[in-house]
Image (tube, rainbow, N blue to C red; front, side, top):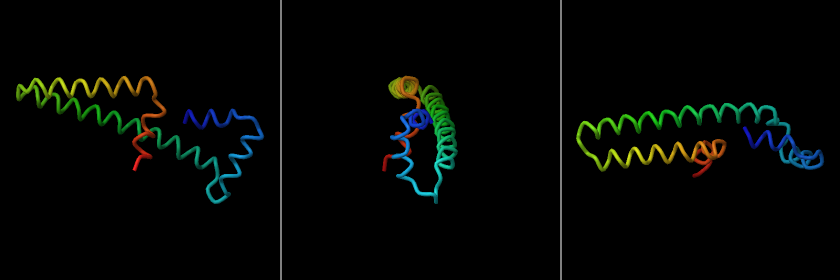
Length: 98
């Protein structure tokens, strides 16, 4: 969504060029709406991932597997830090990669 907001702030001549890239079969306002939905879904999926990491961490704690506990905790912390630093990118990063 942040990229869309930046795009809307472009000079008129550049915004017209962007609009020429899209035909009327899929209007830009629909694209904007879908992008907001995608951002919301990415946020939900990210929090689900963090919850799954918490579950794994708890399982490893019960098993007294300290190395995997540490690794899961580090993975979760790194994901949270990366998302805090670049939130708009994080969700799209995994959505568009194939």
